[in-house]
Length: 125
Image 1: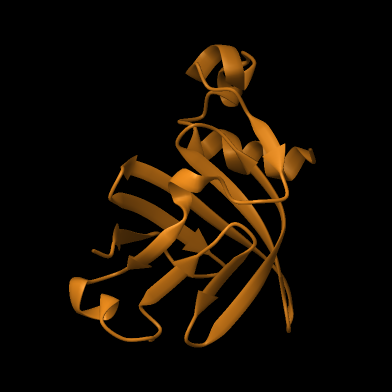
Image 2: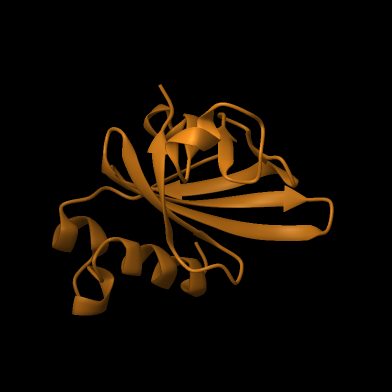
């Protein structure tokens, strides 16, 4: 894992690694790597309930190997994750991107990618 990725994941794990302790010990979280997004993060998510109804730029379809939105689609190249947070490395037509997600509960998560500020996603029903 690169130092930059470790620092990004540490921030999402409440700066556990910044305390000088190993992230697993400090936050009680086991950090893992995979080529698929874990099941708990998958599904249809939206920034607002109305966005769940149609394919649009406020709705995210997250599968094991891809994150889709109306204006972009990214193939998963790798995932570093804990129980509640994941850094998803995406390969996209215009290059690579890091999509960061962190679960607040089973139906709510915070997300961040590119230059965009952190935003809330809610699971579509």
